[in-house]
Length: 258
Image 1: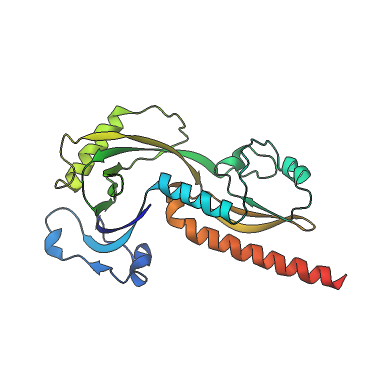
Image 2: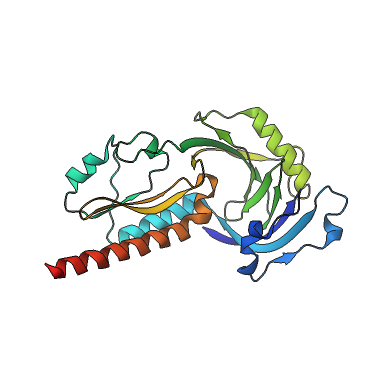
């Protein structure tokens, strides 16, 4: 589900301190010795420990935890928030984590949202080390130790939603992965499968805030994370929880005044 891995990250251009925001919170972070990347075209490299998530295992775990706490899952499609307001008229807080839902759902309209297609190659190989390259030829090689595969990527295709595998992208991702980590990915690797994901992107970045839509009726927006949904999930959930507590305190105080 969650595995600690070692990650080597290379940058085509030396990053600004803001790009290395995690440097001060990751105790295992260290600048890479220049001898490891000099003459390769990179201007900077770093090494650190991080977490690799196995999505299917992780999501099943989260679902079980929610159900154990009394939560219920209902699968349905809606065209307007009014449908939820009518069905759950006593509810005060609604969390909008609808991905690209604000493109079509009335009451959530946001023309900054758009779908962003991603595609990965899964390669069978045993390693607990990952690699990443930032720049024009953005590439990552991320292991999933529990499944015995490595995820090779990446690619961004804004406003594309088809699920068909593009073999040209497959070949390019293998080429880039081999170039970045030849000791892990060969020129003709053992391919375990492919992954296509339609990621919920948003121009200008994600939206994480409170909106009061009526008296004692709030929407907490948490969407538009693009390909960083898992990376930001804990922080986003924590922020949503904090906003719920604020609303609860405000509602309780107002009720006592009556």
